Length: 240
Ligand SMILES: C[S@@+](CC[C@H](N)C(=O)[O-])C[C@H]1O[C@@H](n2cnc3c(N)ncnc32)[C@H](O)[C@@H]1O
Image 1 (cartoon, rainbow, N blue to C red):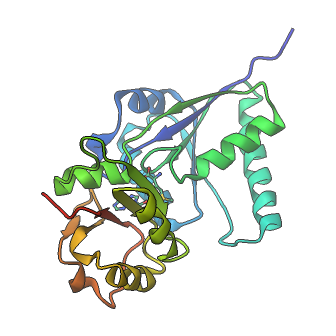
Image 2 (cartoon, rainbow, N blue to C red):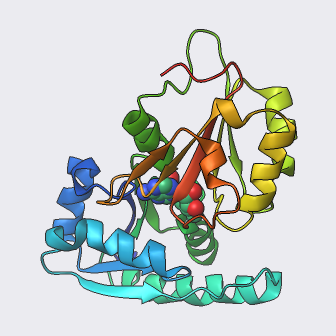
């Protein structure tokens, strides 16, 4: 007889507005005994928890710590460690949920956790509950279509600066760049050199009380951007 194992739920809680949580996410959060969230950046952890705080009825809530490093060995060790923490619960037959801002399969720590848990125990059942992404909510806030007609769309990370923009522009009509905060100066410079400042909208802290839509990119020159900021770039120009 095989032992009963708990189910791993990966839950996207949306980008900030608690009303953008799905009914399915709500139902599972009210039922599971354990809720985990990544504490690799303070923002992700506290934001994800704040969004769902009122819906966690009986769960024990725990952070999973991830070091801020690019060292592959240190990272692999921390994935393994965190996966084993969650797996220990699942192997007692209890369900566990991992919450993540936006969608859990879009630039999220959940993807790594899922892979590592599956590697350690391929029999674990995982159910992923999609969330509204930051950029879907941002486009809605700014009333900017992401794609129309036959246009294409490219999602890119700004974590290494503006260089990826050039290849994105060659390949696509519309670009969304997440993780713009660290190298915003370099990203700004690239947008300026490519004459894209007038085609770009910046959305900051979407869905939170201080949410802002910045149409005049020049007003952000030399500014430090917060972690929760992203860019929507429309090659053909803005039309909202
Ligand atoms: C690690 S990624 C997480 C993406 C998330 N899983 C999603 O589906 O949108 C973090 C980046 O998402 C963007 N982001 C997430 N929430 C946001 C918000 N409320 N407002 C603006 N940008 C946000 C920012 O670019 C941030 O640096």
